[in-house]
View 1 (cartoon, rainbow, N blue to C red):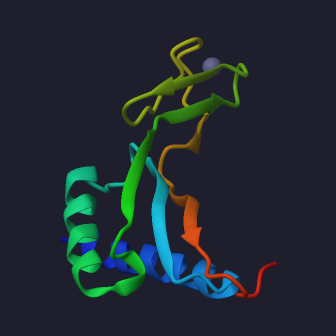
View 2 (cartoon, rainbow, N blue to C red; view 1 turned 180 degrees about the vertical axis):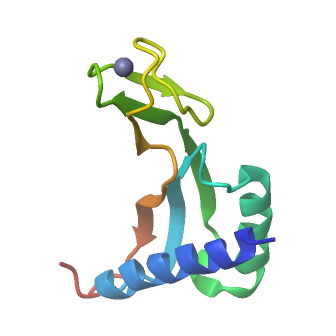
Length: 122
Ligand SMILES: [Zn+2]
């Protein structure tokens, strides 16, 4: 289950943002999950719950996953399109000069933090 190690990475990223702002709790954690990222959202949620049980920073947090479609560009004809899967050919010209623009990423987009009075802020 590689979602556990991915969740570990996300947790570290949240902790680093929290430290920077002097926050004691994270609330809403929004993550973009590319449809081609090989991450299964349900397993990532399970991993998140396991981390939340032991981590005070995450105790009242919720993980909100936003699925990002794959987006492609054709270098042959300039066509751009979205798809839910891997594409090897351009649907417009049939060419194979296809580039993936997005869809493989796993991105921490937003964290709501609880910052105590008097804590340092940026
Ligand atoms: Zn094309």
